Image 1 (cartoon, one colour):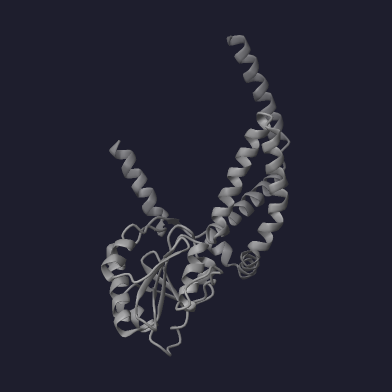
Image 2 (cartoon, one colour):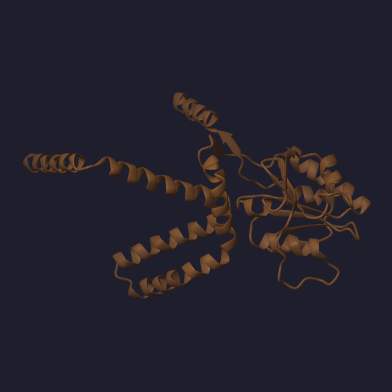
Length: 289
């Protein structure tokens, strides 16, 4: 047994040494460039709705691998045909995202985001939820139309970029002022991310589903955005002052402030945490062990 292991080790060492000796500088540069491109693509995908599509493609790839390994011809054929047609469908469905990615590449903003020292980690806190509920209550009483999108797991970067960057702490006064009629930012949606108002006057996709005739554009936009993401979207009707919440393609109407607080309680979403803090936490965990 030792003889076999020694021969294996010797053969592996010779192979490794011969391979290393044949590596050129251009090969190292080539590997670095490929790794940078893959990393850049992953960072870009995580900022859009395409992230969950990518995870679905990875699952299909794993299933295809097992199908080929165990000679599951029917499953392999179905996946092969699906992927061949799916590539064209992906290009058509995510054409706006691809165009925006190329624009960001030209501006250099993609590389700024890719190499920024940040990692994802946060959640909607009770203070932010209370401010949203208080703002909805105020605007409901004044019959001020409003559309508030609370980002959850699916990134809404493509919606955010259609509006005006705010990057401010969430407060009921600020939300109320944004949606005052005739003000520059009142028409559109506010996107809340990481317990901050990320942007305002954002354009959301309208749903194609049939809704009651008494529901206007705000409600159609809320349902439409909830169909393509897992966001919680709060709507205040300008005509009736009633509060509604859209989530996963469903619209809950005539929601009281207390009920709205219950709905927002389980909302969790991604945020940012410096790598230094993340490393410190891991280091402390290792010391405690």
